[in-house]
Image (cartoon, rainbow, N blue to C red; front, top):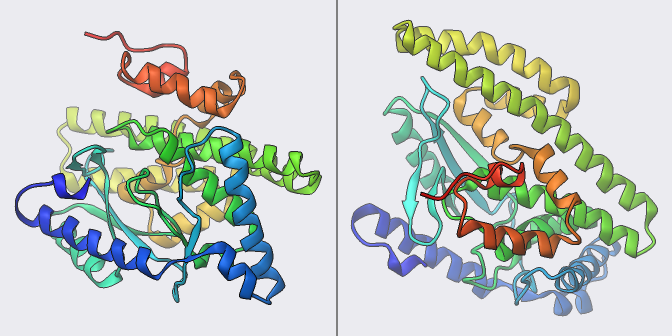
Length: 335
């Protein structure tokens, strides 16, 4: 995937990213080897869960390959820094185009310093920017991705949800539809986590996964409504001839209400958004993982299995444009 990019700084960026990925892979160790030498009970439990959830994912029909078979030790809480940006005067992400994956609204870095420099250059262009800390990532099967040890540090539940989320990406990915991909992976991870714990007789774990899924749907409902309100505001403001400064002040008032609405259903997310400073970049980053969640979850619930649901989406991708509309039963006609 990386060697297909041509020209200029984008080629340099991806070459550097490939070098960092190679280092990450080289340092990784098999989870089974780590389990054999680890004495800490919590770490052993997390490693055992990693081995077990990969087996479960394969049984459920996800494309597992050798991804997350290994663990890469990390000293920081995050191994991947994601720079995302948006236009300040409209609810639209700033995107970059790459082969295979299409247009995506972020760029990833293994080190914070180049991420901060790149974000600063975007702010100089008048864009809203945000650096998001990612605990794990997927190269969609192009490499045998290791699991960062920081995920193990968060406990076995984090291991289950993270691995299932990333393996959903590896099983299905719609080029250029990042919000759908991320929201789909979130929905799949919650449903599969509930099934994982149920099959293992862990009623408390299954109940926890179900409650997190329901909270995610409620958060998605709020973010969906807010996105509609913000998009309408920017359209109306442009029609009235408002200046960029006036639009930024107008959106600030809307975001105050949005933050209160989010806080009612998900205090943790509201707190994080307030800490980041709610603007178009941070709002879109949050909405990207919970966009049309109720419809996606209903689509999954109507299918015999998650694997079949993803297979049907693969077939639909060849005939329908917007997969969000497809799962809601209103596919776009193919020209």
